[in-house]
Length: 154
Image 1 (tube, rainbow, N blue to C red):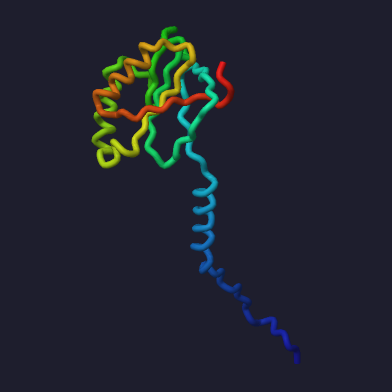
Image 2 (image 1 turned 60 degrees about the vertical axis):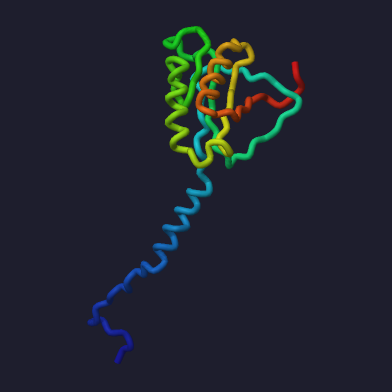
């Protein structure tokens, strides 16, 4: 008599799916931790000026970035332009309209945590910067910072 029977049908054990949610959440957390948000890109040529004394801004603040420089694409012309939210603004009044929308959206923290960051080409005309500042003043967006390269002044 043999211990092994050839007549019995063999069945495979069922695959356990108990650890599947754990694996899915581990993958989710991995991608959440390792992903990096996209930095705003400028459609303008900007050569920032350098400064010897710089202060780093807290990254938890709400920051609206204004690029002022010459367009990289020739379809926008050769003159200095202002870019806001990945689009070149057609005129200064468009900045006021944009700020009215943002002021309503961030009304709880508008005066305390909203900053306007200027990334300006070092050869840009001051009237462009002044025009943007005038639009900011009309919307009570008075906290302005300037992005510069760290180093010794020229």
